[in-house]
Image (cartoon, rainbow, N blue to C red; front, side, top):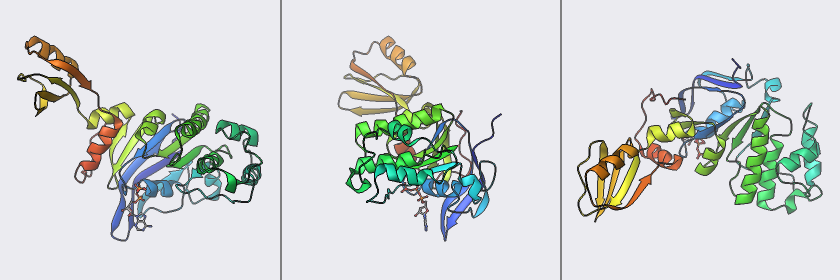
Length: 301
Ligand SMILES: Nc1ncnc2c1ncn2[C@@H]1O[C@H](COP(=O)(O)OP(=O)(O)OP(=O)(O)O)[C@@H](O)[C@H]1O
């Protein structure tokens, strides 16, 4: 079995009286994008700061590439893009890339890096003259320059338009396709679903769900059907029945069975729709729930 690139073993981190992470254990396995999801203040940035060694845990243990994140040698295997972009405004794009390259023993060729992130042709532009989206893409690309084993991306595509976002996604996929690992936070659910093979949901410092995007969605949200009828039938397997005029919304574990039963009941219905929950539904549900228990329900992976 391949060793995880990073691990948290029963990690807690407090800031004064605020418990930002509460007994979190997590293995980050190589070669995939792990999406870290959770409402504001859930502890995502704290977790990232622990993995990259910027903070130490209050209790428990954090490992990066088999050792302590505080060791400079381990951090050489790490790429990082924080939430804020800061580039020297008067340097040209190529100068910035060359400058950062010199910090690594085996950097990617500049041309290849810029191509991966859709920045070809901007080499001679001063970074201060780039658009906000181009600056952000350059900052994100630099996290990949040293060919790291793990890249931490905190909200990498905030403020990017659709095509710029797709360029970043392409760069990320090229990297993971070659065996790289990414720990990603994003408030864009579409991005989380598109990129992450595994999603870990934090709420109030605790892991409340862990699995594929489909698993997390299915475990936290209900499917439903809706239809119009003057009278709604009594059907087995309905978890909740909401009615608005002649529109009925039936929540269930099994939409196929409910539809068969609805037809069999002889109800004169129209405009039947099936509602599949999205990751966004799951997120809203988790966000609205009260404080999670110390031992989260297992979500199959
Ligand atoms: N340096 C700090 N000093 C005091 N409290 C902090 C500090 N950093 C984080 N916290 C608190 O710890 C908790 C977790 O914060 P954290 O930034 O890790 O959450 P987050 O999930 O990244 O949130 P966001 O989505 O808003 O970035 C919050 O209650 C926050 O106010």
